[in-house]
Length: 108
Image (cartoon, helix red, strand yellow):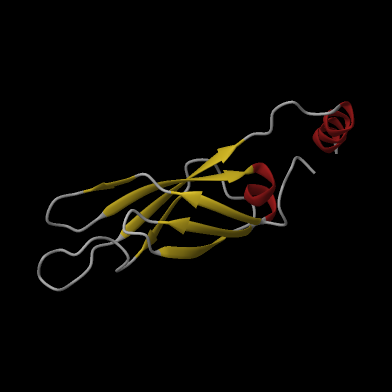
């Protein structure tokens, strides 16, 4: 439903770093299906490495997740944190059947 792919999504991140802390921020887009039911997201970082994340069911837009030690090198041999912000993308161009299903869900 709504073009979801079995709860698994691939996403590229846009990263920004905080100087000296090694902190990396990444915005990750997830579809409505994954946000509601949970699933996996594979993200590719700026350095080319990939990380698989488990998205919890009922994840809200703007939810932040901190992954310790997955950020940038702080310069002292330790790694900063990666902070993921989930952006839930709503479906567009819904069929009449999909609209009807959503209305039924709203009324229950």
